[in-house]
Length: 230
Ligand code: URA
Image 1 (cartoon, rainbow, N blue to C red):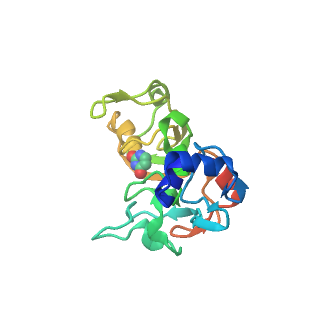
Image 2: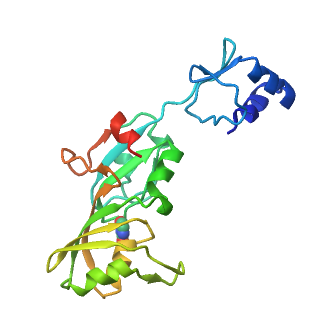
């Protein structure tokens, strides 16, 4: 929210008084004096007027989980274990999932309470590659590569998928890099060839790679470097 609006809501001062207060240098955000009315205030920002703290600011939190197969990418589910059940994090119910995975897909899952950060990670326009290891029921032939690069028409969304890079590893295994995250996207792409995906594992999202030290079901917080990469 804009700083002037935030101050108006919190203090009941009118717009003019808020501007005067800003110009007088009485307002600081995260310890720095701010005079700019448009300055962005987030739930993580500490906002102070003179010596009075108007908002303490929540700590931003970022987790990496090795999602196992057989658990739901949701925060609650009446039937199955969820990714949140696996996380041993304080206030875990404030977190949301940045890029869901299907019930039987394993691999890198990121959870955070920072909506701007997760949007940067998942927005198709940012074109961050999501890399999947794939196993299939039928053989993968060389003709697949061009079709993945060309794109698939998805009638339900009325769109053609962005160019994807398929690397064939052997007759039934491939590595796929896509920049979107449409519903069941990888399975639907292979479905074009009537080829069922039998194993799907996400290895990375943009520069963030699943930590090889994490066994399925294990998690850790992201380092400051990893957070800054997005
Ligand atoms: N594509 C799928 O089909 N499933 C996933 O879980 C992720 C990408």
